[in-house]
Length: 114
Length: 116
Image (cartoon, rainbow over the protein chains, first blue to last red):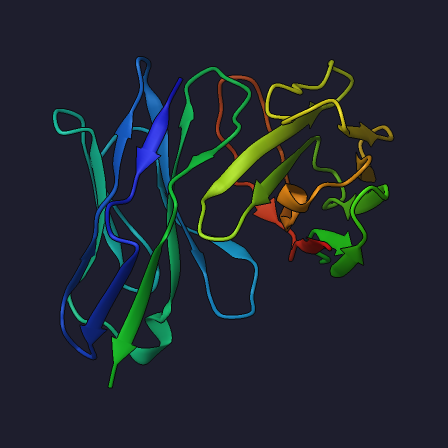
């Protein structure tokens, strides 16, 4: 079975500073990788995903994540954060040719300090 | 268009009572998922419906949990004889799932269940 580890439960960052949210996964088969975001009092939304091809994927609001197969990682980065990025971020995996259910990490709460 | 909707948004129930949670997926989405998020934990997969195929119930934590789906529309998750450990946010998601392809899952706002 696959699993996802998000080592940092909370990450405080000053506004305009860079941030990296870590995600490692374990799976015996190929996986799809996702980052979901949950803004305060809102539902879960897809931020970005890796299905195949280029290992670097980007979101429309400046986040990027890189699939590293050798390190089984899919860390999320942003070079300069804004107050509006305050949210909880969840990393998730789904195995190829499975029923597409998602296995989630425990989440990282990103707090932006003005 | 309308997204995934869930009702009720909040439910407080006494231990031992049965509860029913409802999910209305996005129209045309063939796949429907139920997840559970307990406090301080990640989302746990519960059950998956895809078209007319037999549902994947591998994530249901006990036989007190069951779910149904009418065709490709509404789904209900039923918890019988609720226990305090059932307290969680129950999330529903739907997608245009296809074999071998990964479509985005759209999540509803969730139902917060509190068992007292």
